[in-house]
Length: 298
Picture (cartoon, rainbow, N blue to C red):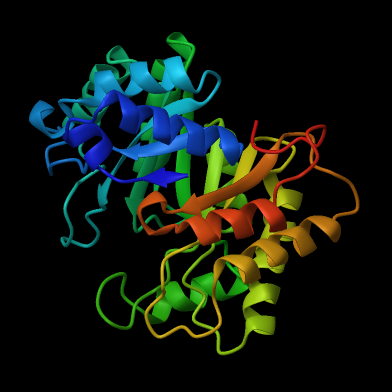
């Protein structure tokens, strides 16, 4: 589950922490990506922005033992001179790592990156993942990353690259190719695929979208890394077909189309805690939660 910044940026009562823990346990949430950023352009995050992160981590560990508390960090990636953070700069990457270390010191169980856009030739991003993994593994923590849904046709990417810029209204889509997705999976513990925002006109097409990306992603990297397929509880702009039930059923369908289960655990990532109503949590439990013996989300 992706969770709002207020959990780390504002004070909360013990009752509020207990309520959060109860929600996590009732819905069998294994990992929570608490927004702790975004990064400044120089790779830092002012400590005042996450002044209550330590209290949050301590409370979740106390009231929901076993749930991993991850620091959700990201920024708009500087591309072709536009954007926020320049990951090509080694000094910026070093400050990102120091920020990660400071948050791990506060009790976070892992680091969750969401840099956008990430293109499939982004060597600096892979370099950052290598360095971050060394940090998280040295602390016994996890590294996860959010990525856009993979390409539909890898062969189209050179055409996009040749004809379209990487910025502007008509741009080369930042979709990971099969090869790039495997490179990322080899460097992290978890991959969360942001499969939402499908912008398709019917529920059947939206369900097909989630099924296809679930099956393909698990076939590609499900033996390497834990995979979470992102499902929405917000109301997408200009989208009449996408909702939580359609997404969950699509993910279930994609899993059912696999020739065999992945070797690593898999699950869904709920986006997001601040948009999910009690009715949607009930729908999630009825539609998604597996028997306790099924490997999901670990």
